[in-house]
Image (cartoon, one colour):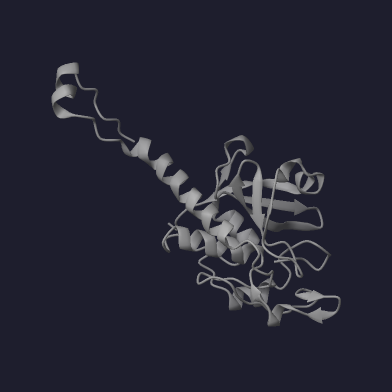
Length: 210
């Protein structure tokens, strides 16, 4: 969600969002001898080897779902596990030039977009809360140099903790729903842009509940 300050998002209106949203908020295969390997064929992959591959494949699906949402309008409070939805206006949020666009717009806010992309890509096994801070807490930390497509990128300021979340698309790009009056968009080389680089709070990778 965007914040009450221009061009950003924060947890303002969290009480209403929490009521309206859905808050759900390594063994190795023994080495085979040359003759045994020839007769038995390739050894099966171990769980330790396949887990990172599965995580990477899931992340790519998340990024693909996010790319398919490009050009969908921003709607404060919009987006759920079914996709884009009507937003609403809350305090100063959802307005543009004094006009309430949220309640008349079908779209996503930033956490609504990430919620939908992860839910669809994971076939419903990962359902994030519609709240940036909760999404951060539900996810595992990822070093900046280890980010993969699908990872969530969070932004913070002293006056607006974890005010925005985007989806890493690979090659330094981010897909996000920024603020009222904009469309879901891809930002190239996002962490080379001073505005975003100065507010970068880290990357996280969602995981199933439990």
